[in-house]
Image (tube, rainbow over all chains, first blue to last red; front, side):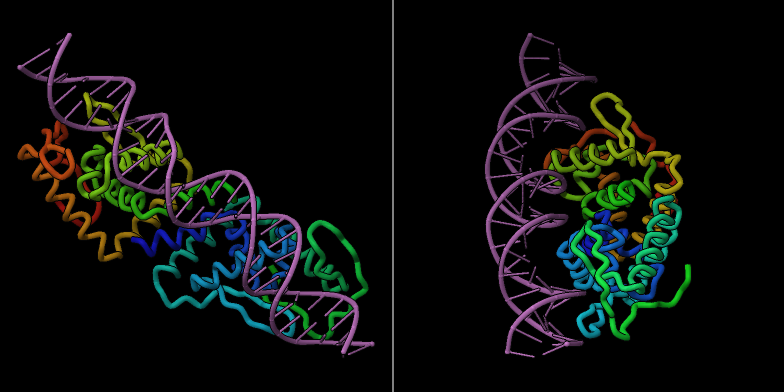
Length: 140
Length: 140
DNA sequence: TGACAATATTCGTCAAACCGGATATACAAA
DNA sequence: TTTGTATATCCGGTTTGACGAATATTGTCA
């Protein structure tokens, strides 16, 4: 049961739960998306994502200077069930909708040229982000 | 999601998982049963049980010098689903069967007059262990 | 090349969690 | 009351985890 406990430990953190929730609803997200939506520092976002990657829950894909994270296609039945159950569970919380809305807003803003700014501030730097855009599948 | 995280934190410990697993399969157990089957110290058993009681996952019933713990009849849908899923999940682990067998052995030994000191003797169980329906593997 | 953006990692700190052993409490029986 | 058992709680010590700030790394672009 040690393994199961280790898995639950991952879920025992609000920030990580939120990240997983977002990743359940977008194919992939980069670190700055998560920073922005969760309103957390960069190191916090990166650290938590690394934790989950090390446990095999998420994977990352490097593209230029961006790291895109997504849920791991789990082979393990146990973990798969966990994630499915988790998604159902989280979807019931009122907070969840708000989070997704926030994500929508952020992604739109980002497309307009917002940059990945240090927590809180909102510098609308007229940055041209090249062709790399995290416009992902799923409209919900 | 804070609440959900708090719940998962409870599950993020191997001993507590085992306790919950046992309680999923017996209507109630006293502290010394859990000590014996899990082979842990008394303070550890008592502490973890208290933790879960404080979170509303288990309840206790005092009878003489014994404290009988059982799963809380949860009203909260979230927690209920969690527990159901948890039971299913744990039932798949090979370790789980062994635990239940161990419990069987212990309860039998206890009936014969074993007591609960560090792996030794016992006290008679005032509980009708024969009529309790373990909903999963094991049988009485 | 140098400046800058996105991310990873390190560092020091702080709080929480877990633990065993000791002690306290509660109860039962002699 | 005294003794012994079952459990709860306290005490300290160790480990683990989360955090922000600072720094390192990597990639882009001018």
